[in-house]
Length: 182
Image (tube, rainbow, N blue to C red):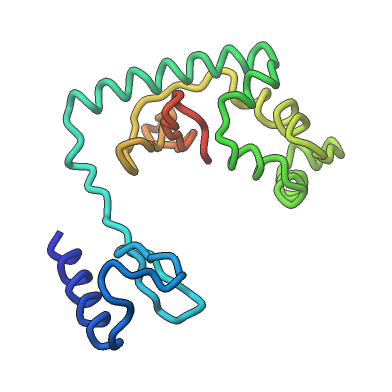
């Protein structure tokens, strides 16, 4: 919070040093810029965001989110077991689906997956990715822990037999429920 006041103080000094602009209430035809945007140069604005403090999550919020995320994963496991491509897509954020369906992503997975390379499988679509990568590896996922990234976004982990935390998903509650975002 203290850093935020320093940033805003710096912004106020910068604004004062830049000379006068339109009088208060006037609009010179250019859209206003939110105070959180600091212009490093005219062509490359830099957004200053407040850091999320996970310690602000109460035990009750953590427990409730863990229950929701576990239920989401149980549902997702059933979808994957049934090979329900449309059901799987419905559980993805639009940006994640776009990434999974991109030719560059599909080529990278085709080239780096030992299983796909030894079988000469080349992924051409998100459906191929689902059938060849997700179905064989994601039918029995289990969530042992979550880590809050923001109030609406979590990383979901499982523990392997050695007790190591392995990240399974990054999930975000987009208002209509949890979706895979990464």
